Length: 375
Ligand SMILES: [Zn+2]
Ligand SMILES: [Zn+2]
Image 1 (tube, rainbow, N blue to C red):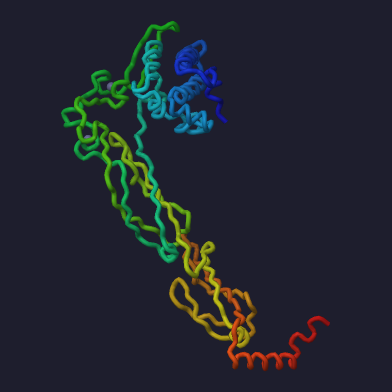
Image 2: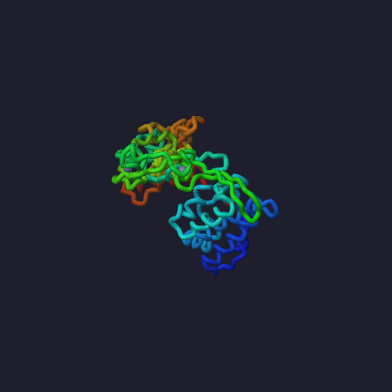
């Protein structure tokens, strides 16, 4: 797995932010890919990842507690580094770690955005959301439509998601002339470097905002109540989830919405128990019904149906009723209903029943029932 972040930066577990910052700066200089003597892109990437976590109190606490970095793809390989997380950690000047950029910017021209190397920013994605619904077994079997209402972040209508008070407040970024990138040539202890990086003022967007939208404070997002009709397909089972694409939180600046995940719980049924696509049911019958045979009426998901009990049916016999189960979610046929008969021995007999059972007993002796059992 990934190397320990403290080891990567060569600091102890209880080092201060200042110490971490210092260690990071030293290593960043050493391993920066533009450093022709000791540059090491892979290593540089790793120490940036470590610093992004240890430089953020919340992320550091999470890392100390769980040993993993929240928000970083684990084992994601070369492409696993997410520039947006990195930027969040250093928070565009919000966190006091942000000045590392300024410092290193002096040395290297600030080319820290791996994601921005090619000049392309990934489209931002909103948060995924979860909604839980309970459905009946019948609804699971035949499918249903559920109305759901939930709260999510939506696009601010006042500014159409731009975050600007009016259209004229969206101006071309003066620092990069709308390019989203800045190019710098700089004299450093390692020689002359020319670097391209995401414009720090506009974060690579090419535009900046003069007056922020008052309705959304410039975020482009407002909380909204969303109503949706969720189609639950026939055959769905307990514990499954449906992904409703792009119905989660909106993303700032016209990114794509996150997804909505609808988690399905199927409530227990009074009579039926589901096992994959089959339905199991227990039905009580009397001793005489089992001995003589009969037709009984049993409930199924599709309504009442007749089940033939042949003469001489033994207790716990299971009868299969074909195609009375659940239609497969992926169209692979339909399940059966399995009916187990439970032969009930009467606990109380009236006079006549008692007499008849006694006669039956006498008759059974004559017909040899049990006779050879233990001989
Ligand atoms: Zn707005
Ligand atoms: Zn700019």
